[in-house]
Length: 153
Image (cartoon, rainbow, N blue to C red; front, side):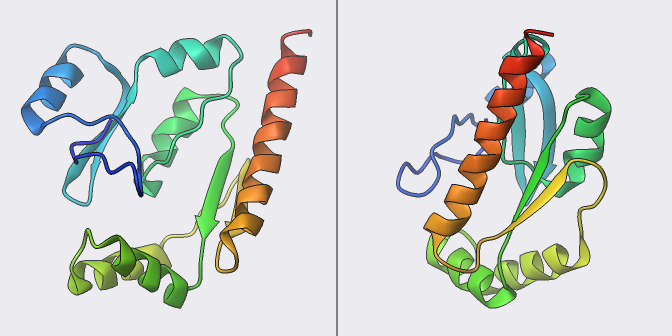
């Protein structure tokens, strides 16, 4: 859930206005919530049920929330989708959601943060999106197979 209107052409998600988000957060509607880029984000509380029952949950999150996710979920796999700064700048500009200055600030933040530790896989998305997409799909298939097997153990 994001406090930004959904755009099915580029990013389909559930959306709430700021006040409604704050109310939902106070009511326990989110397993995890955070702020980034002037917006508020939340993973629905039913994610906890899904994960505790052996399901695979996929979420696009801020790097800043990853330590909290690592504390909360034992079998967390992190997939970092990267692209060269040039490709990333072009794609961010094409979205049209941020000014040039905001894009440059985002690129600077991105360059200063590297993900490491257990369960981190990095996918370079600088080339054809289909290539990175297939790599991501393969990781999901492996996670789902592990999830299916863990229910038998």
